Length: 395
Image (cartoon, rainbow, N blue to C red; front, side):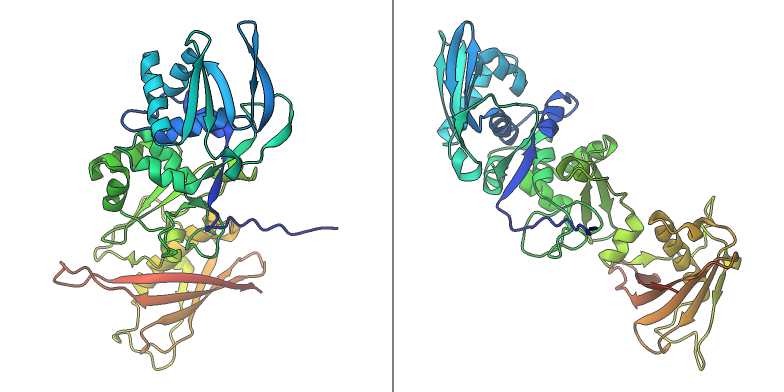
């Protein structure tokens, strides 16, 4: 029997899965800095080594019993995990986390060993009642969302803490979060349902400057940790994570297309006054035919000029080609627009037919255009439209 599987990540879930393999890859990436306050990274690293059942660990000829939520290691191992130069610096981090009631720890073996315990481990993770070694490089553990907000507010966030903060707050395919059906989007759970953010809010959240926020996000984008989609004006930015689906759900990652995101968030599509011909147009203007409705007047407020409509159709063709519509990449494909609404209406609807000259069945879409508010500082309003395509059927 065949089944159709739909994955949804619920935004109100109070915990997030953290895969040890993902965290180990971050620990090995020395290009991601831990300068500043990295308490989220330190605490999450300790949680990744904590047992979920009892086991024995033999160090220097002595066997130590380690219970659920505990682990024992050498002080030199802590120094390597935390990327500190001296052992007393790693111990000072443990002192701070113990003072904040996140962990408790004791020093053993003439102060060469450290045994730590994660406070409240059993509240968020399963503790099994039998002895067996626990693997430290595979599997996952649950991390509370509330601890993330507390730890990132204790100082200036490092690059490592910023990566983890973004990862924990990623949402995929949740109807409550706009744009999450396109890919794993970062949503800070502000009860708005919109993942749109700006550098000012991120700077306040992470305790750094807006310039530093821009530099770090662009760096993470170059390293393919995320895809930053920034919009003009005061619309803000949207952050999508790369390799999130393959890590969390073991499925193929999706490609993020900016034009498709613009339509999802109803961001205005700007048509410049001066026609600048790009090096490679997706489709030629000769391929586009715009049918006029009866008694239409091109000067009406709700009408769209033919040159602007052709530019919009070219943008739509780029989006559909990125989504896998093969006809949009063919230079012989014909595009026909049929008006569905009166030109006097504010919102204009068109039927877009994409026909293949080889006789294949055409694609049909509905194209909706509504006027966007012009920028306040412009004396002459620029022509801009919001494009929203809805796939009706392939006939």
